[in-house]
Amino acid sequence: MSILVLGGAGYIGSHTVDRLISNGKEDVVVVDSLVTGHKAAVNPNAKFYQGDLADQPFMRKVFKENPDIDAVIHFAAFSLVAESMKKPLKYFDNNTAGMVKLLEVMNEFDVKRIVFSSTAATYGIPEKMPIYEDDPQKPINPYGESKLMMEKIMHWSDEAYGIKFVALRYFNVAGAKPDGTIGEDHGPETHLLPIVLQVAQGKREKLMIFGDDYNTPDGTNVRDYVHPFDLADAHILAVEYLREGKESEAFNLGSSTGFSNLEILKAAREVTGKAIPTEIAGRRGGDPDTLIAASDKARKILGWKPQFDDIHKIIETAWKWHSTHPNGYNDRD
Ligand code: UFG
Image (cartoon, rainbow, N blue to C red; front, side):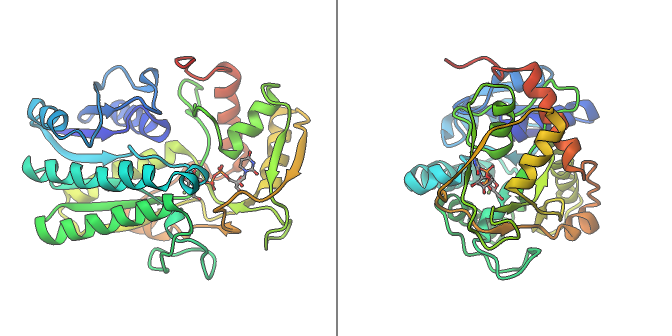
């Protein structure tokens, strides 16, 4: 059997492709537009196609040329909260409308399994912590809304066409492959940990902390960090779950521990031994105070056993990637 990985050149997609190839159990086909992904991040043993999943003639060609594909893992979405507040239609077009186009072609080719990157941002401002999968989903930014709509589209496509799905709601992803060969490279970078590490490297002057007046113990946002290695394993387990003929489900993926932005800064100073100059700035739009996952369901039902439960270890892997790749994959101007 073959697995089709959409967005397999992206940060989490490339880790999943790498894990699938190193498991050696099946062929891996990657589709990526390379708008945000990097060809160099894709394990060379995967079959690579450059293109957009919303381009139906292109996707038909991919399915035609790879008739063994029986499952799709879908990472190919835009994912920046702040950008989505300014450009909501970009998110509803690429993420939400793209999902409709994809499911139409999957249905044509009778591919009835999809594992999809959803997000903690679908919960909005949670009423209680930690967050469980059946808690209310009321997004406070267009990114989260676009992903919630994708979940709903999949639900109704399951009802009508029997396309089974697993929605994996990630919390904050951080870290790199422990050998330092693949990691996070966004242009422009907006995520906390890579920015902290770029300041440690001297590539940026200082870290701006967006808000210290939130309703949290130290006033900065609290997030739950999960390593892409562990996320990759969860996707592979989710494909197995669907292949066993089980029902569509949603699972949170997090570590169940929260770290404030200031705690991340402190841990990064410890790991890197650098001062990391910092300034407190105003709030960024769309940031909930705290997001912490209850991920017992993924552990119980998928048998997920995350290996990276220590924030220092997560930061060490990211630091190894950043120190050995100061310009990331070096494939952009
Ligand atoms: N932050 C700063 N300074 C920076 C960058 C970020 O203070 O320079 C803060 C943010 O305001 C936030 C925290 O660091 O409080 C984390 O921000 P990130 O941009 O790293 O991540 P987000 O929490 O905004 O979003 C990430 C993913 C989303 C996902 C969400 C789920 O990008 O796709 O986690 O928790 F939905």
